[in-house]
Length: 261
Length: 283
Image (cartoon, rainbow over all chains, first blue to last red; front, side, top):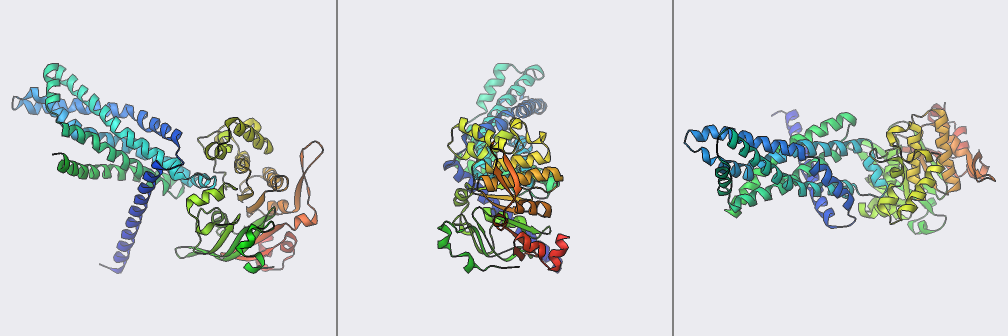
């Protein structure tokens, strides 16, 4: 390895560690801000509307068509074993445990993570964040804490919505395309689920919602370089949040399996 | 040309006295990586006076304002603002000091999702317990002061550059600060609009007794603010007039060069300086 490569590697490691350090600091500050004053309750409600209600359409469509396409695909596969009536069982187990939380989180990473990074990034480059501080407001409490709380609360709720419409999408396909009766489908849905699955599907989105929003805030608040920097921050937020969603999903699943099963 | 030492400014104990400096920098140094921004910068600002920082782009002028607000910290040296040592305070402690300060940012830095009225009343709405009708009254009052009452419900994007700058001044003064910092308040504006901004700065200083720290490279505006004063006429309208000699002496100029103070003195001293760099800058 040449000296130039060595220096580059050291710089890269230093920068990466600094990013991680700043991200962890932001996470701690956000958690502390959620339990101490001043607390901007109105901003939390606004963000719940922006993140939750605003993401409803994309989550509904994603959930519905995921359930529908799973029914179509699994119908073909199950036919090979004469197990078409088990389509409900397969959909509920897969959607609630894994696909519902992950797909909802990926949709939120694209919509919410990018939005937060772009908004805070624009505020950074136009000195609005400095103006907030100059006016005696802590941007962490005013901007980050409401978004983190909204993401933390709304991600599980949106996941439940996605799971519900996903199973409805599967039901419509099972009924119309696979000719599986409603009774068989819904009893399969219930039989395919164990309480541990439900817990896993409900606990994971809290973690995923937290990382999506904190990554968006972290990237946004470290934006520099004008409008080009805002564009870069937006892309970075989506890429980082999407990858981290899958990584966190793996580790949380691993942890929950060891706890719940 | 005169450079004052800390002894001339007085020790921290004296900061609580009536004539103590509102701002005191003592041997402040700051560098970003290898680049030296400020090098042993020492100066003070007295209550009700005006300090005008001049210098080329990148000389560290705006950095001085950010250091005063505690937005960034120096590598060494001490900074006292309104009797508090801000270079050692936590962000939470700084919030208390910032309640007595206002800053007008270079491009206004107005919150683009808020109306003009919400921008101006932001600090009072969010950070005080003032009743909403009183906040509304104060917002109308300060917007009247800068001549923008009719724009209270507009978005910042609907205003011209000069109007946005005046809204930024209104926002900074809404909570009645004792110290106002102006970062290039007239840069990019036409001469007529610049004069209206200068007039607002003079009115705030002389009618509201606000200490002013101005960063600019617009010499015309800097001298205008230094040699004019404001007074109320019989109909309570503010008039801008030529300042008396004693008043002119209350405005100090500081020329920054390569991170250090190259000159400090009055408008007359600056004009009469034979220093080649100053002469080039003034020409």
